[in-house]
Image (cartoon, one colour):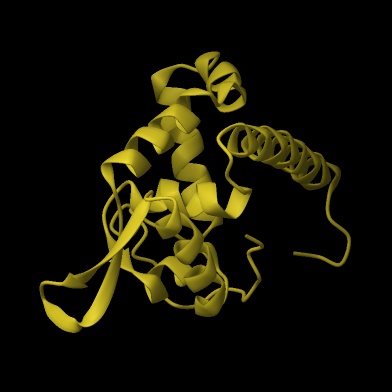
Length: 160
């Protein structure tokens, strides 16, 4: 891209920033309503798909593994997450949602209106196109879209 972005690119960046801000605000409010921090809610949501090693959770959320350890400790203390041995490698511990964690995550997800409302205005094909464009922007493809992305990316801290 040139040194100065074209007006369309600037508008798209501003629109994406607005969507992210609104989604983040609602997500934080929904998490708080369920006595969770935003980071705890994100970990719970991620683990609701399948158990995974803590290191992989850190990679997916682009933060340090030590941050995930603290978040999982707090979720485990509330019986929302448990650690269990990986059946394919007993040296590895998997973080997994408990039944209570799954119910909490489902209630949390059901309370998120912001994402549903604007997306409901789009047809299924438009939503699929948007998804595909966002994946392309993030350098993902259909094979790794379920979260098996490489360990590359930025390091960051997730506050619990």
